[in-house]
Length: 469
Ligand code: ADP
Ligand code: MG
Image (tube, rainbow, N blue to C red; front, side):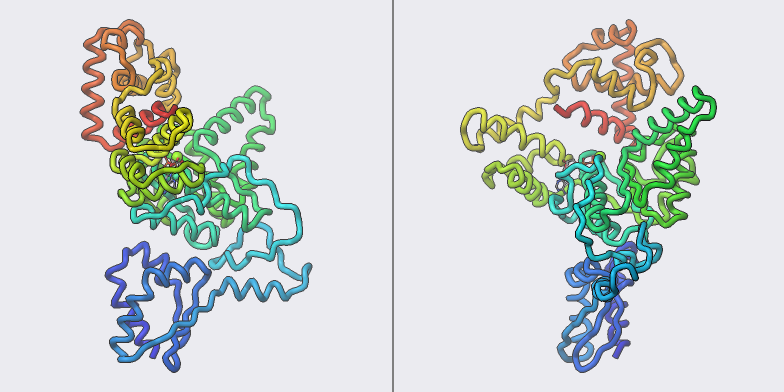
């Protein structure tokens, strides 16, 4: 009888992406089939639900047509059983449960919540970025499922989880949601959420104070904070490590220490590990050890659903028609979609009216008229200098080596695109350069954006930061 199951699973395997096969299909075990009942076992609730929604109907269909009979399914969830067993063990006899579990099935280590005041939420976690506020659609379904899996069973199997995708598509939201969920389920665990930029500045800061105080403890503190203390380390925008050799080296050791200790690591990036420029191979290869999941631009239905969800959360009444209009016109970036809704809501409430189609049309046409109002060339220069970690003075100065010349060209390009300044005006703000220098910089970046996805993504990231109100 079990063969019937094996055959049915095999029949759907070719239709399932390899990553999904490992993540969702293999962990489901068939423990017996008697009398028309199939007994299945799943490591946790989330696996069970995913399996029921995505695979079970096809498998059942296949089995029923082979066996010419109907089947019923009984599911056991290992996590629930472990939980029940634990609840029967008197307190104090439980084994040590501090820190994440070390083995697959980690979620089964969840203990019944003791009657204590809830532990404070880690300060870097923003309240609105939780799973229940994330809208799932075809383009983020896998990343969302992977994030939930890791949050349910940290450090059990998928380590690190590496989420990548373009700007404003929900990476930070998912990372934060993982942090929230783990904190909720294991309030005693140390969940550390940081941006990669913070890791780098902290590292540089510790090195400098180490030097000043000739061998003080500050590097040690840094290492305790990131290598020893966290049960879960979540690092956003890991592409920021590009071309920062000593920070990379430090992160390499941080990663190894945590991974070795079976602590969960979660990373987000705007690129695949293999495409991260200026990152050492040994680090890139580690980024691929666990699971890689992409978030892509959401389709129209998902964009509408996101708008409606945001409107509901902000208690804004958004007519369907207006939601559809916004979603149809703002396509590439959820952050922009959200911004448009906020502006629209502010406008409507200012005028004391409901959101109408007319207001929606106006909001979209404003967004399309490209220059964000009030953006200055100084803001562009500052943003670019900070992103590339070059001095503002050098960005505007005459130095010609690539490390400053490339950011300078990007800054000129963005200044031209996002402010109303002319070529000669822009040139004058970069230490008196000729207008032809600015024109050729703008052309060059335009060309590179067409040819080189990494330049496109950097420019896109900067542009989207600068467009934030
Ligand atoms: P990224 O880190 O990929 O640049 P963010 O996570 O910062 O993007 O997302 C930008 C904004 O869009 C956030 O406010 C986030 O809540 C929202 N957002 C993105 N995707 C979704 C989604 N699927 N459901 C709800 N909100 C989303
Ligand atoms: Mg982000």
